[in-house]
Length: 133
Length: 126
Image (tube, rainbow over all chains, first blue to last red; front, side, top):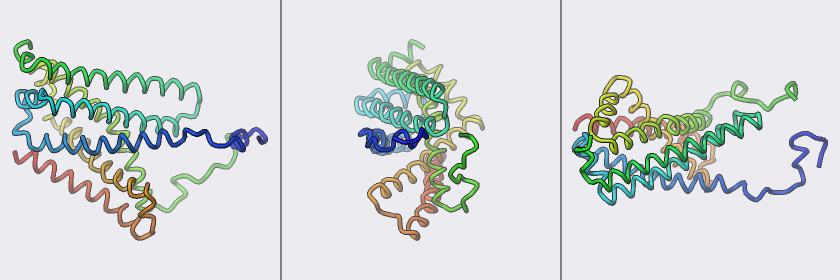
């Protein structure tokens, strides 16, 4: 323990034993994004058009719906980890940092939940949404 | 604290391709996290809400502003993809030799531009 500087306060305390966790999760979700985005980009290119009928029928299928839900989870998770690093690098006030990370959690979990719900609704309503709207 | 010497930052160093690809990785990643996920949520929400909502989405996306968003996002995706793959190589301890590091720092964003152009060629010729 040193003279009160930030590095002095932590010197000699040893590893926090969780530094690699965030780093590893960023890699695991990156691999998920890699595989699932190849699927999405390939699908967008190979679909005959991007109109409502074509896209909704395609996405309502079991395999595309599952892949899209997995893509939502993987990409929102990866984005949350990346934005956390941005916040930690540029927001230096501890209270503000806490608030911004809290907002980040609300936005990513809320946005991801809405996206998953949208896919599930589309997949389970198989074609009835066109009539309802 | 404020007047203590700080470690050198961007304006001190001579620019090199490794700096550029690192900064591009952050800009494209955080850009996609903020703009790309919003577009994804809007797209899926519009699909789940029916044809009229989907028409609103589609109409915006074929305006000049919509194309700026979509082309920008696709460029950001391929750039982040290429620099991300470069990160995987660096993660296993390879690619730090000066020549190969410089080569892939320049090649990654250039390959990304080619992939972006190829992607839009496929979309627009349909």
